[in-house]
Image 1 (tube, one colour):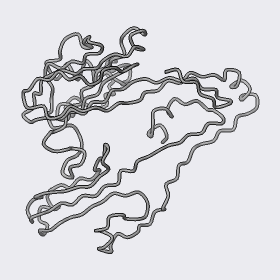
Image 2 (tube, helix red, strand yellow):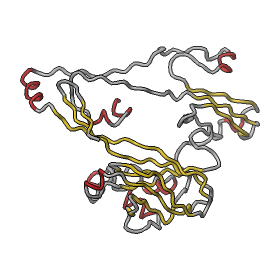
Image 3 (cartoon, helix red, strand yellow):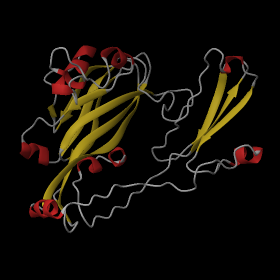
Image 4 (cartoon, rainbow, N blue to C red):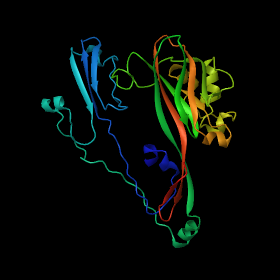
Length: 301
């Protein structure tokens, strides 16, 4: 869906005369893995240089590759009917496929009844607000090491921060043996987020249930997950303990502070037994005014 491509489309009202240019960088990638008839012994991968990922995973489950003959497996992901990996094309097995050469985007068109359109046009200036994202990273934090990292000198309309702990010894986004989820038990102790030099959490989170119940569990849930007998967390507590995401709502400040450019820091201690990388997403709000009749846009911020 369009709303899955960008959050803007989730809040965009019905409008005339709008034109969009959507630029998509396809996640084409290829990986080679070597097997010694018992286990995987190594891998190499090629992927898009900027924020590229590898959406492939090989396992060693029973009745799977564990009893395979020693050799090399090569796998690739491409969009369209053509395999662009020269090694696989030379083998002659994956030259072309059965899908089309082009990608199609279907957008619904709405025709209003004249009286409804007239009423809709009376209030033709609409304020549109949506969330966008910055991505940052903190690399190679040793086991037991404390960190106080300045993520950005200034972000306006900051709404939330999401931190994903990943193992530092391998890039989880391009490792063919990894599921791409947060590192197993990659928890952070004495955790807090500072915006404009002020801590967001009243006290540093020292225990896992503090981070989960107070910040993660009640976001986007039905009634903030405060209704007895009803729950709708994105991830249950046991799953979060194994593969934790650290989420902090930063929007609970006066409006004049939200609109100001404020610094963003994260602090804590790596309580994992492994060195960690932290992928940080800063979620901020953007606003503009849209004329639903002419399609004109006036930027607010």
